[in-house]
Length: 110
Image 1 (cartoon, rainbow, N blue to C red):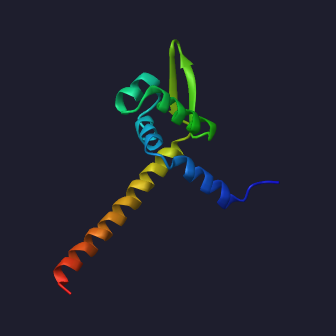
Image 2 (image 1 turned 90 degrees about the vertical axis):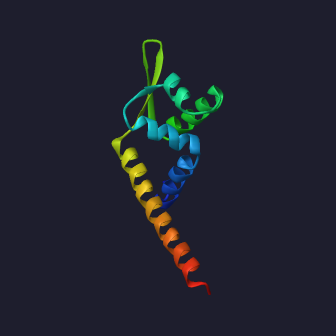
């Protein structure tokens, strides 16, 4: 029995719902990176990064491969970068709307 599409989408968004995972995906938008580079950019313990990378890999959002002694990570599809860009646009719109509301509330003095 297959999972309903809305349930699969919810699971994907739950997978993305961690700040370290989002940061990893942002860094991988520019192309594959070795774990050591990700560690240098993200302020977490190596074990925590490894755990978060494993979650992303199991979900199929990132892929990994060996390049000599390095373990490289990459986005599994450019659509992941598109999703991050859409998230930025939505967040920007929400924040703009909230800022406008805050200005309006302050100016009305009700």
